[in-house]
Image (cartoon, rainbow, N blue to C red):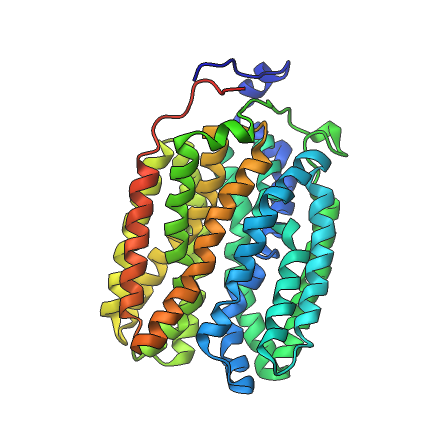
Length: 420
C-alpha cells in the first residue's frame, strides 16, 4: 500500500522481544482476558443456551426455533454495539469497559430467572442481558492481547480465547446440574454468580493493558495500522467479514443444535450431552493449535484447511446415526473449527489492518461473525421444523464452511505498509 507506516520509539524494542519474554510479562493479561471472554456473552450464555431449550419448551411450550432464535439478539448486540464497544475500548481502555459489562451481564442473567410465560418476556430479558454485557465481547479482551504480543500473537490469542473452551466444558454440566436439582430459574442465578464471584475479581486484579495501571509490566505497543474508514474500502475487509459470516452460520448452528442432532439420530440424550461436552476440549485444541500454526504459517491457508475439514464433519453427522465413534469424530472436527474461528478473525484483523483502530475494525468484523452466528441456529431450527429432519440443515452448514474457506483462503498477502 502506498502510504507510510505509523511507528513509535518502541518499535525496535518490541520487535526484539522474544516469545518467552512476551509471555513472561503478559501471562496475567492472558489469564484475565480468557476469564473475561469465557464468562461473557459469546461464552457462557452462548454455550449454555441449548441446555435451557428443553426445560423452557417443557414448561412454556415454546418451539425450538423460537428459543434458538434468541441468538439473533446476541447478533444484533454485536452488530450494532460491537463498533461502539471497540471505540470505547480504544478511547477509555478495555479494563473499564470489561468490568462495567461483567456487572451488567450478571444483572441480566438474574433478570432471566424472572421471566414469565410470555415468550416476549424471555426475548426482552435475554436482549437486556446482551446489551448490558456487550463490553464482554472479544473485542475488549483481544485488543489488549494484540497490543501486548507480536511474535507470539497467534498463541497468545489462542490461549485467551480458550476461555470459551473451558466454559464450553464446564458450564453445560454445571447448568444441567442446577436445572436438574433446582430448576432453570436457579440455573440462571447460578450463572450470574459465576460472573460475579470468578470473572469480576480476576479481571479487576489482573487485566491491565498497555498504557494502563501497571506500567512496570506493560509491553510496548506499535500503534501502526489503517483507520477504520480506509479498512472498509479494502477488499480484505469484506472478504474476511463475509467469509466468517458463512463459517459462523455453520458453527453456531451446529453448537446450538448438536445435542438435538445427536439424539435425533438415535443416540440417548444423556450420551448426546456427554458427547457434546467434548466440544469444549476440541475448542481448546483448536484455539491453541491454530495459534501455534498462524505464528508459523500463512494464516489464510490455515483457515482454509480448518473450515474445509469442518465441512466434512457435517456429512459425518448425517452418517452417524447412533454411532458414537462417528459422532465423536464429528464433534471434535466441529470443535476445532469453533476454536479456530474467533482467533482467526482477531489475528487476521490485526495483520491486515493493524492496531491503530483495531477496536473499531474488529467490532465491524465481529458484527459479520455475529450475524452468521445469529442466523445459523434460527435457520437450521426452521429447516428442522419444516422438514422434521436435520439433514437439509447439515447440508447448509457444509456449504457455509466451504464458502468461508474459499473467501478467507483468497485474502492475499499481509500488507507491508498501512494506509494512513
